[in-house]
Amino acid sequence: MTIVRSSTAGQPRLAPAPGGLRKEAAWRRRDRRWGYIFIGPQVIGMAIFVLVPFVGSLVLAFASWDGLTELTWVGFDNFISQAQDPLLIRSILNTLLIALITVPIGLGFSVVIAVALEKLKTRTLYLVLFFAPVVTSTVAVAMIWQQMLRADGVLSSVVWKAFGISPTDWLGDPRLALVSVCIVSIWASMGLNVIIFLAGLQNISPSVIEAAKLDGAGAFTLFWRIRMPLLSPIIFFSSVIAFISSLQTFDVVFVLTANAGPDNATRTIVYHIYDLGFGRFEFGPSSAAAVILLLLTLVITAVQFGVQKKFVHYEDGAE
Figure 1 (cartoon, one colour):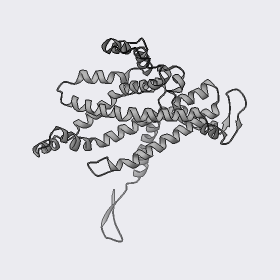
Figure 2 (figure 1 turned 90 degrees about the vertical axis):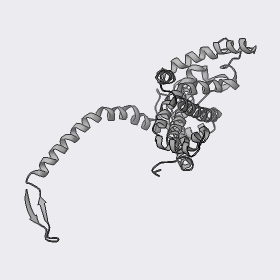
Figure 3 (figure 1 turned 180 degrees about the vertical axis):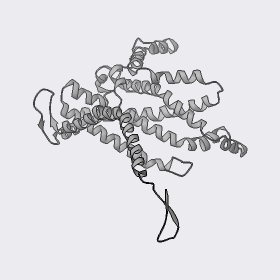
Figure 4 (figure 1 turned 90 degrees about the horizontal axis):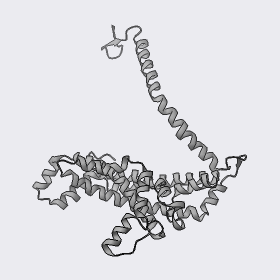
């Protein structure tokens, strides 16, 4: 390394040793090459199973194809036909209703349970019990609930023996079928939200809680004025994920209720896409419905991010 003087400031500066740049470039290239090797399988998997199907669905949305005959371009006809399809309108309304029921109720119960578990010294067993449905196959969960919600199932039998009410066909009644789907969805997803909220509660500084108690804050004030604002970023994150998951409801409906329930009472957008594509082999309208679902998801997510400034409180002031 040699020392040369700057012609402007007169201060000495270090000149790079001969070959230093070449050596640095060599190890950077080597690290970059290993980085490409490690992320290669993930990138290839994303390209094959995400990017290619996404591009294919966009292409099919503007075409008519049944999987066997020649593909023909139809422009926006698929979108126009879907906008006029009463089944799609029914599917959108059912899906939004599921989201509006399951997300607030599911997150509300999860927050209450997380606060209750935080006060326990030994909570491992409870966490395992609440988290078990999350790691259990959704098909298995739906089949178990299907046996419980039948007219002669466990739930109807218990209600009949306890209150003398005639057995109710939860899955056969159009007014109760969608409620049954919401109950199963809330029960199956609650464990994950409980874990997330419990982690957020444990991350709250104990000094903040102690300071509030010294100022005379009671249990309700402590929960509503201290814990909830500090927990609001996690609640916002969970609500976004829960809404997106609710808009993609399919497997519970497919297993729990046959053919989207009585009078299409449990027909969701994803089930509508499945029915068009793999039931009727109308891949063009099916892809158009999938694009509509994508746009609906983007709009709802954008609205959530737009209103989050009113109720989400960040400790560092970052949004």
